[in-house]
Length: 409
Image (tube, rainbow, N blue to C red; front, top):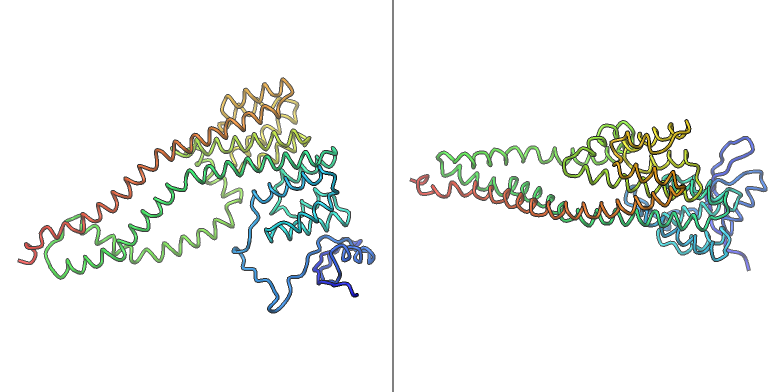
């Protein structure tokens, strides 16, 4: 009986370093890699071809299945369990690729398995997908490979990402209600100005007379909104595309991120989130055996704030010169004195990773508490603002009706 074959797309490199892209029919990706090796080529990636015609999978940019931090956390946890149970890395990756429901992650895991199968290290294979796997994961895996404790490192990665997902979830759940109320206020105000106010304006024009000042202002705002609304919608759509493309660029981050830390209501919350993320990532990497200078560079980038990233560069310079971590941290406005003192104690006692974990846990609780307080404060304010907007517009519309008989006469 003939063996079923499939079409595989591959990228390979020859001895001179030149890349070759083509398609090959084979029973599986391992057979593709083996045939490429026989030809003197090193497989960089091997993936099943998507098909053609009616069998082709339709992928619309921006609407496909995305790979989130939660997916990476689950993947790390499952890999840790399988490797800890004695399965080889290749077999664990093959099982993971088969059972992963996320199609985008399934494809990436398949490519990682192919790279490992052709002789690449696991960390190097992950590093070929920087848009999926964060630098902290790649470097921790590399340290685990060198030290021979990959399963422990994968557990640490899973715990780190699970904590990050939980933190994001708390913030989202706390801020959902105020954001929804704010959006409703904007939409309700725009709908009244565009659709309802013009009806009343036409009626008032037929009646004649001079309208009260609040009503005249409302009619003017309605006229402006009818012209400005399409421009605002197009502008918001254009800005969202620009923002998605440029928000991670350094010059853009330097333009707005320092201001976010000084914001009157949310600045303190943003700083606590950045400190919690820094402490958790830094502690995980030190425990995994990543060199401290390399760990500082990565956690600075992972913090998500350019001010904290600059602070970690200062710490790097200090450590390079043989100084302590705590001194440059004390000079940064991002790190509270308590954090600096706890890190100093961790350095002196040789338990820096444990101290960083305590800092991360403390600030996770602080973030949760702060978001709850903000929600409790913002909710009544948003309701009052929504009621005030709609109420003032209704009053402005009905003011002329109080003089209806005078206008008719």
